[in-house]
Length: 138
Image 1 (cartoon, rainbow, N blue to C red):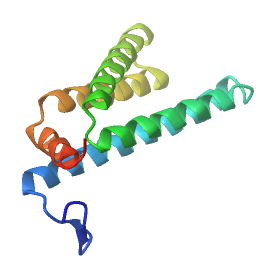
Image 2 (image 1 turned 180 degrees about the vertical axis):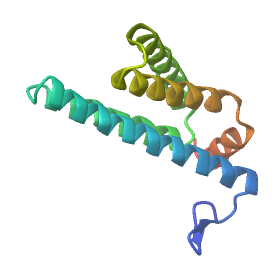
Image 3 (image 1 turned 120 degrees about the horizontal axis):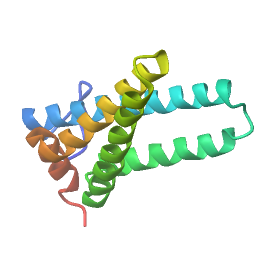
């Protein structure tokens, strides 16, 4: 039965689908880690007045990642656009700011986001995992 776990591992998945699942979980974790880092940096540099907006953005990120994990093609398309744009803009910010501490953070964020967008487009294992997630759902 799809979605069951045995010994901590999902059952009914091929090795390719399990690899895709792991890749998505790793990138989701990195995305959440980056989001928390942005909230902390924003609060320490600008102040806490805008924390509700930052927490709302964090909540939207969690919702998008959960939707993506379910295998939604729409969530995948939105994620590719957002991570591609975010990654590209972060790399442009790095090029403008140079190799300062903030600039290196922008480069790391940009690289992570762009690579996630590329993986969502090109990874067979990730796309096999999404297809597995969609099976049996309308």
